[in-house]
Length: 225
Image 1 (cartoon, helix red, strand yellow):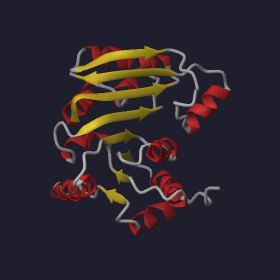
Image 2 (spheres, rainbow, N blue to C red):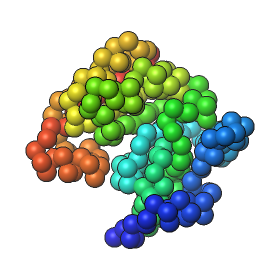
Image 3 (tube, rainbow, N blue to C red):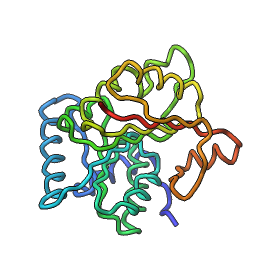
Image 4 (cartoon, rainbow, N blue to C red):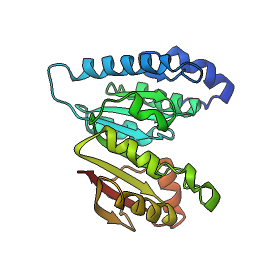
């Protein structure tokens, strides 16, 4: 069982207790700190990939970490990096990783818009995006994590033939993302408008809820050219 959920205030304080597992972007007022974050991240990646070829994958928005931790268990030779801004979610994910003795994950507390400032160009094998906020109102579309601005960031950090994989329960978000990818260097390889929940699928907390409500799950698999 997961430990009790912390309050936001508790999480904001506690998150600094795990520098070996959580990297924090403190560069709101000082961009030099983001350069230090990049240096710390690259040193960590170099340490994990030393003397062996290993894939590096990123999950954008980890929720409570169910997907990140499960895929890390399934692929122990791969380095998984989660991006999240909510401290309580990050700590929930770390709790589970600690209980399950997962050693191949790191979480970064930062906004997705700065990904290309901490990763090198063509460094990432796969970007996973599971059930991002669909921002359903038209005036909020610009906030979606699959706008042209964000797609360009994923283009930059993905290796050639690297994958972008999206799952969502929101059809508008799904179709919007397809449109954005059509105008990018990330080619759509396959789509699914009713993804089955089989042994290969890793459902998140949100996905389990949406499936219980009878909602279809949409998936996009695309590849950087």
